[in-house]
Length: 235
Image (tube, rainbow, N blue to C red):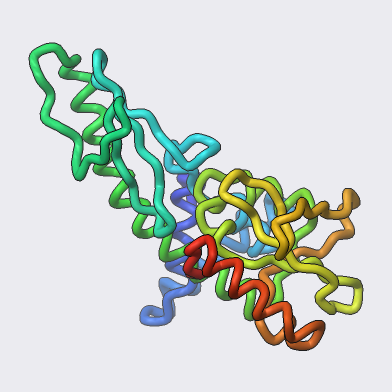
């Protein structure tokens, strides 16, 4: 709680959700409440803002520099790193430094990859549970929140594009549905561009199949076909 970094607050949230030790749960929850109150946010809004970026760029990638040699990393759909060399050849691990490499840069890159692998596993598990809870609790985001903390976040964008999203009206009914493409574009079930309302009154959430059934039973079938075509497995 005193550290206050995104990663620290994410771990604090995990402690607040555990049920084995009531005292630890209570103290972690109290610290989260205090931080949220200081920032004028709900706990859900605080969680949006404290997802670690893991040093990734806007495309969930990272460059690992050995000096003369550079390697690229991209996160897969499970938030696990996929390595490639400068020619694009897949690698299972970083190679050992050679005589031409910068020893300090190579050591730093290896350590960065090690830490990324370790933290990514925890972050993935935490964020998938959070998204599932958001669907079950019918959490709604504004347009600005959705774009800033989900679509454009280096980590969350990995999971966001595996889900079907809904635009909900004031009564809570599903008004339209869309997905986020691999390029970060919003598209409908026909892959046509989908535009969200510009105002902050938009209510965006993870669409549940039951909500499709209530609006149009054919929607679930249409989306299942789209996900199958793109070989997308929902988390």
